[in-house]
Amino acid sequence: MATPPRVGYLGPPGTFTEQALLTQGDLAGGELVSMASISEVLAAAAGGEVELGFVPIENAIEGSVNLTLDTLAFETDLLIQREVVERIQLNLLAPPGTTLDDITTVVSMPHATAQVRGFLQHRLDGVATRAANSTAEAARLVGEAGEAGLAAVGTSLAAELYGLDVLATDIEDHPENQTRFVVVGRQRVQAPTGHDKTTVVCFQQADRPGSLLAILQEFAARAVNLTKLESRPTKKGLGDYCFVIDFEGHVAEELVADCLRDLKAKLADVKFLGSYPAASHHGEARRRDAVAAWRQADQWVQDLRGQVGGPL
Image (cartoon, rainbow, N blue to C red; front, top):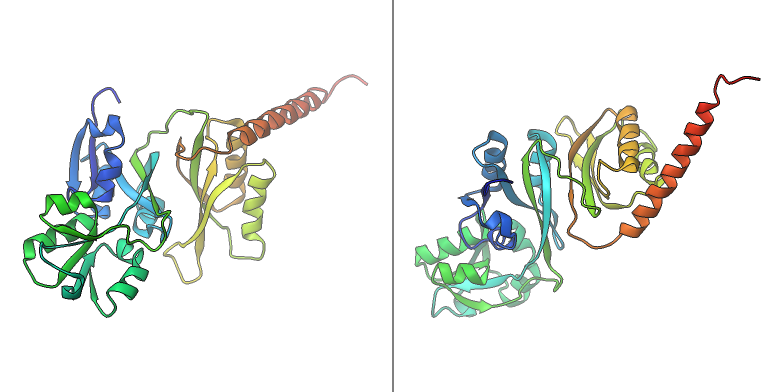
């Protein structure tokens, strides 16, 4: 962007979202606007109050952040501009002088609390949990409450910001804990980089045997690699589901465009959520070979069509 953007993110200061955002130099240099919830960030981006929104969308332990996914799929016309993958280190935070034996209630964002179930069960069995909008909000609440027995799950930065001690580090259930964040904005498809990802939502004509297979065959026939496939209720009725699909490639590529064209023609609808730079590093050579093969096949078909109506 020509000028530093105004970026909304899940706050308050000290969240993992802010931590991930600050790794993006071009965004960190803009005006960063802390917001109380994911819903507020996405609504502000959709309404133009901020140019970009920065929110979590998927965690390696707990899976998709459904609020983010559903808002993008059903409630806004925002497009994903970029993905950022950040290593997540969860810590137990408490007021100075607190011991594990003193803790009676742990406060955090439900998605974070779910990532430390094992720690809570084995080290704090019987302790109550309380929900907050973010890990940093939990730390702030614990720091401001001055209430004996309260602790939070959050970042070490949040401990510094809100005057808490770190009682335990790396308390997540699985060591390779990562969260995927996305940058979203209004109607702006990123230019291809050669290492991209595309996200779409596929809506079925009807729930019938083989309907998912028919969708997957469009990708398989073109050797387009899926990186994520998830079903989500459409909110229209029990049993009515759509499919959120991430796959390697960019809409500017002929192979991807051909796949999307066929899906759009055969399904009730396809919602495009963006083509954007991928954070992972695999699949480039395979996709390049598939594109070359598609172009050769396309040229073959064009040559055949050029013979239609020729002399006997």
